[in-house]
Length: 204
Image (cartoon, rainbow, N blue to C red; front, side, top):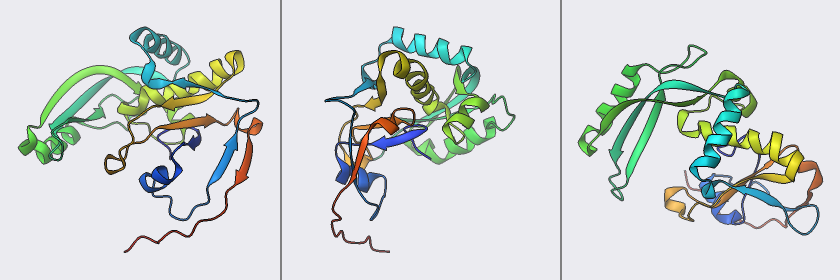
């Protein structure tokens, strides 16, 4: 399972990524693109018009659908930021959440100004779940559909090697810049295993 989709997760800050993703003693590989540079789609730079194009494309190909959603939001006790968890109430495979699931989550965060909101929005279809390799939650549905858009359309037509999220580097919040290198592009990259570094094992 990868939050970057059906591809190889990559990072320019491997030590931070190792800690965030809990990779332990897994080896580090240095990848080099064909040519002097590689193009990745900058997800954070997308504007509303771009997102509309991707959403329409994904709906036409059966990766996204309009669905009933229940959004539970609350104030994070650590930094005061507003957090949200979204439940798909109308999953096409019949395995979606019920409103009771959202209400149960709301009970957990009521003391943090928890609220629940019913809305219409995009959700992953069974076809997208199959493509990505797990049941994609609504919060990730657009990003996962976007990775298929890049691989199926932008890679063959414009040479985009994957997608890139320019997230803030903040290990305690499990945040770091990260990308996905699509499986279609991976064979063109050279790979070199790095010299192993002795790292302390986490305490149990």
